[in-house]
Image (cartoon, rainbow, N blue to C red; front, side):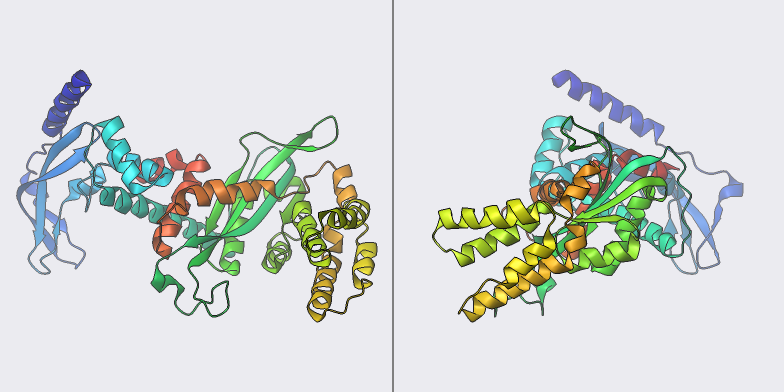
Length: 415
C-alpha cells in the first residue's frame, strides 16, 4: 500500500506537469463570448483537481469579456472539469459507489480502495449530478420516441420478448408529499411510488415445459412519475430491446388498472397475462375473510377455487361461484362482488393452461425481484428520505449501471 501510494503521488506530480498549458500565441488572445463580444486573454490560472492518482494542479489560459465580465477557461471544457475540481475518472468512481450503497459507505470505499479522501456529500452531489445527466438523456430519447423519430433496431429476431411493470414506494422528505393522502385515512403520505419496468427475453424451456429466462437478458427502467410518462419510458426500453421484431410479445403485471391501460396504449397486440400468484393472493384474502381463524377450511376452499378453477383457467366458473356465495355481512358481500368483478375483468389474462402450452411465464417474479434489488436495496434503507430529483437521479444511475450501459455513457461524454 505504501508503494502504491508513492507511485500514485509520482503519477500525480507527472500529471501536474502534463496539465501545465502554455500561454496562447498572440493570434489566439481573443475568443468569442456568448454575449457577442470578444473575450481577451488574461494570463494563466491554476486550479486544483482531484484525479484517480491524487491531487494535481491544472494551469491553463483564462479569458475575460470586458462587455459582460464573463470569464472562460476553454481547457476546462476539453478536460471535462468545467465547474468541478473532480476529474472525470473520480466522478465516474463516485457514480459507481453512489449507485451501489449509501453515500457515506461510498466515501469509505473510495478511501479504502482508491486511497482518495472524499466527503459523503461529494459522493452524493456527484452521483446525483451524473444520474440527473443520464435521466436528461433518457428524456431526450423519450421525446424522440413520441415524435416517432427512433432508429430502426436491426438484429436477430427475438423469439419471445417480455415486458413487466410494477410500482413500489420510496420514502421521501416531507415537502414531496404535500397534499397527498397516506395509506391510512386521515394520515399524510410518507412515500412516493416508483414505477419500474423490465424487459427480458426467452428462447428455451425446461423438460417440464416451464419457461427459462435468457441469462443476463434483463434491463430496467423506472422513475417517480405518472403513468403516462412512464408508459413512454417503458415503450422506449422495449423498442431498444427489439420489440419491433419480436416473434412473440408478452406483457405481465398484477391487476393494477394503470398497467393494463399502458399495455393497451403502448404494446397493442401483445399477449397479456395477470401474474398467477397475485391472482391467487386475491383468493387467499377471500378465504381468510370467509373462514377466519380456520386454516383447514381456508385450504379446503382454496383447493376448489384455486386448484380446480383459477389454475385451470376456468374464470367464468370462478366468477359464478364467487357471486353465488351467500352472506349476511354487507362488507363481505361487497368484498365478494369486488373480487368477482376483478376476475371477470381479467378473464382473458388468466388463461394459464393456454399460456403454459406456449411455454410462457405466468408470473411477474422478475419485476417483483427488481423492485427489491433495483429500488429497495438502495433507496429504502433505514433512515433514508429522498427528494424526487435525488431519487430519480439514483434510479437512472442504477438502471444505467445494471443495464451495462455505463461505459457507453462515458464514451458519449468524451466524444
